Image (cartoon, rainbow, N blue to C red; front, side, top):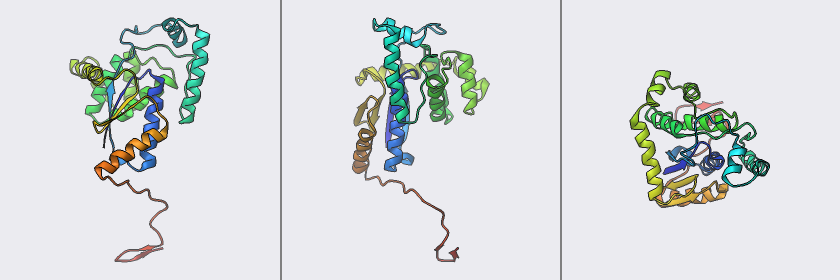
Length: 234
């Protein structure tokens, strides 16, 4: 089962949607049979690196509202995140340009660390309020998930990974992605937004039925008090 996920590291619903997908895969028993690929998407490519503006100030300007109104809205998102076990802190959050983070994720995918880095970047931004547009911060986070510092610094300057990031964004336009998160399952079914768990579950079960996939059994306890062809375990 192939699942492609277009998302941005500063999108609060992308982290929530990621967790909803993971929970649905676990609950249906198909987590080990799903190949999840994260695709780059930027909500605002023009966000300046290192801005001192708070997220509430930036959103208030964007939507012609007040910072107080944006803060109230973020409280609802924080509550939604808590429902799936995530902890959000908007008060000390700043807008970030995520192009370098996406670029780094492309490198991480080449060494089997895309999943770990994606989770680390999202937690760093929403829970720890780290400045993920800053290269120094990105290098530190990458090292935490086992990536080598020199390789990371090189990847952040590698035009190949920049090109791959842009390809993802162009593909999103071609298939009509207008917002994130956006999930495509087996190039056939699409889910837009951080939908409730049951939406993901139904889509996964539909694909599993079509592909004749069987869920992976979950084992409870150990293998004591059982016999095989050679002996019995007590």
